[in-house]
Image (tube, rainbow, N blue to C red; front, side):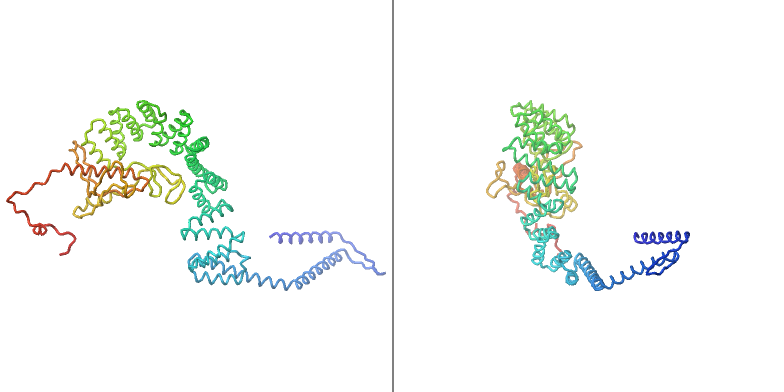
Length: 552
């Protein structure tokens, strides 16, 4: 377009020049070798223009003839390159579609038409073809060869990382991811794998630097970066709590500032402040976190902030915490525990019952059973509450990728994912079995034995002497009051919890077994037959029983 405009401007200028000469007639006289030549000015201008044009045309023709060999060679070279790129494009599409034969064919054709040092994608197509053909060793060799090329180095590291992941070589995969992170921190796959490695090794400073690099490269948003920094700072403070208290306090306070509603950060920050006798600031941190989201660890640390306080002083602090978050089950439970320690059984009972009304769950019934045993010692009511605790939903715990833990951790022990733990109630899977049994009572569903899990084959929990297998726990239930529905008896035992939650699960199984054993002890003995009673023939009994799941 610019050339066309330039050409039009030249033509326009020549036209103006000739028009100007035409309006001003004149002659041009040239004397040469005794001869005098006289022509008009217009003719002289046309002659000069023609001579210049002729010289330009002759120069162009001479240059074209001189460069013709190079022009012809370049034409064939461009044509060859276009064919090579077409083959490369077709091969990449075939590799993406999983057509190993076509990908290998196009790779060979592209390698003949284009040199691999001129087009690095040929190396990628070659490696992808090897992977599609199942030649993983050859593919790894090709990826390793890419490491020598600065342009292909990241691609080679990515391929070696994926191959190491496929083989389960976690250390090798993290090694390649670390090298890729050093070259390009903005790579998400490399940064995540390197983050998992640093967290597993406890390199909190290195992990924090990596988060800062991700934030500066805009790989993650500001809120996500602050969340990760808070998790890492909290883990760092927990690691330094007993060895370097000032550094632990600095990290914990910074982590709590980034996420004031994060319970582990608030707890570790308050612990560092309490150890330095800064009770007031630590209590404020716990109160702010409690307002955002009540958590039992926050409440326990707040109530026991002063080790020398009397039980009634701890009850007063629990009531202050309850006033910050009213009508919440955690508030009622912390007051009930403090009241039980202080011997205020009426307050403890009222608060525990209030917590059950708001959210009936295992911990509330267990606490109410403790209150009942401490106040009245009525073992019947205690066992009734224990049976309700067995059937009640479980208390919230730290859950990550199906792993249940009573303590928070910065990463999942299953996948290594950072900030994976969530405070929630573990999932129960009893409803489906109960509904199936209620809909088809004739089906003899085999119920799993309810056995209290132990931590080792030779060691049992301190509070369980001997637990026998139980098919269906029979718990004595007192007559229900008017208008009160009876709770259904459990049909199947819940799935076993992981080792981190073994103590709570042991307690549930032990309570169920103790209640069942007590029910068997209280059951009336069978009535012996009369002396003259011949009894019933077992064969006759077998004939009268209905046959199940049989055609004849």
